[in-house]
Length: 417
Image (cartoon, rainbow, N blue to C red; front, side, top):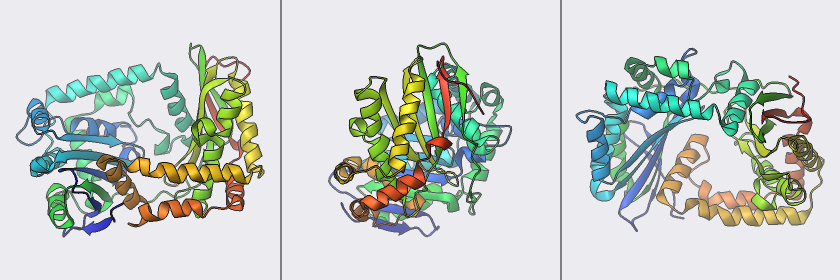
């Protein structure tokens, strides 16, 4: 891996850069802290709405002309929003690089928000919300976060509701962008055919007009709901169950040991204990998995299983049983060795494109992992011992504390709390 360079522009914008000259194009990713967490209390979904409309025409280009500029110049531009961030990506050939950066600047700073594209996007979002209302997976996730976080912003829908989306105006979008996209909350990752001296003024050109300062404040110990089971009735031959509880944060010294523990239990595809017990031995479900979710102030261990209505109770019992075994230290060295081999060997496959590297660099800068993380990451995995994983599993896994949301017509389950 080519070394990562730290770039700080004259305007104070921070970026990680990997220069790769082999092919004449580059990928850029960026992330503003805040995202849906900054939606107004009566306007959930505003950040996501803003991300969907700000590239529908900007500056001198109406919606169709803006799209034509992107397509004719082979430029890929898009935005995304999650609970804690407003992010975006740009992909461009070197020959059209300056124009691509200008189009990104226009979208962030001079979005037109003309009536026709705004109403078109609004209709698309409302149609998507109506579709998601009938999807067990989407409803399981929505109700899990609502039940886990209650009135905290993490408990609200990222995409909003039909009612809130119907009420958003162009002025609401302008207000969100002007108030919440701040230079001090921004991190950038870039990989491709560009050097630091060329990149820095381009970043200042794109982001320099955004207001300085920060609207982000670190979340501390967000309260989580008590264990319990919620059932969301839906006429479906299968039940989708989402389960989880508090996790271990990315900056915690035990994170890598916990990451390995989860891989052994539920994150290793067909080799995980849950896949072996739930799918291979008993044929209860096609798939079951869990992962560590980094949510500032409220890291989670979160999993999901989908199975027939009459087998969901048994599946959840097995999941709890296997989690309990690992929490009690029931782990042998060969499992750890297999996990380490897989996790170190598969890591380079996550960095095979400029897009993947740019995304990784953005995350590294956002999480404060350091510019040398790509070189250190496999060493961190290799250094984890059997005792480390056993201790981390005891910290991480608490089947008695699980909160479960089951969407479908589950048999043998009784809602409680």
